Length: 360
Image (cartoon, rainbow, N blue to C red; front, side):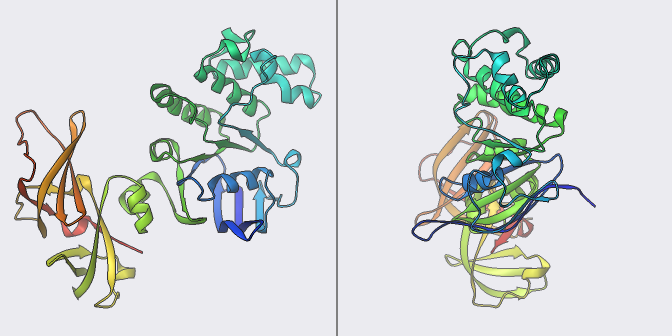
């Protein structure tokens, strides 16, 4: 049986004016996991993080940390630490003094404090900067100080609120690797809030996707990328093409969906094979599973007009309009010698029945 560091049971948060910020949040977080709560601004993810840390009261439901019911306990009585986007360092204290602060407040002896601080500074690569003040450090170095200060007391859970949001792109890429490495080395459970799917999918063992105050899906990065459950997740995660349609008929595991006078084939999972004929549905197909040009071995084909190409080095995405206002993205590795489209060029786009994912 897995050991859970955090359990949330039917957690709700309602603010004054009957504003429901979090609705029926249920999650189990295994000891040592790196969990990302991902979603757009205002979806409830930061409020949930603050409820775990005790900075927001729970309207309904229960929160357990390391097996203890902490729902009504203040932050000081929960074995958690928080790392904020702003870093919140003491400007008049040195790096060493910032990191040792929580141990000093707990009355830890000076020699023992110093030993723990040096260990932590070595871990984050700042041992040579111990005497500097935050104003003398770069953004990435300040973030490492904030991380060391949060981890110095070895909390059961580290809560990270948009920890990379204040960093530029290149530094953010570096710190994603650093955060994951430190989390692995310490074995501490990390719960991170982010609106960046790249951060969530790159670092987290488990991703909790939220929208409109509710959980849309919980899974690994691969599960959410390859099998989005809802229309929101398919739109928010990855490079997915969404198709609306009406179920016309079924044959075994294959559902026939009418879209813009095209009959498309989707292989349905067992729990969706009894969906009634005539029902409107959405299904998604990943851009990297779409193919430009005629492929007789594939079940699905539609015609589209070329609109543009999105360049990402050798990986390119061609965009075609297949119905008024409906665009299909076809992702591929293109060589210089490959075909280049002109605006309005007609092309056949194909994909396998297995590539489609029916959305709830």
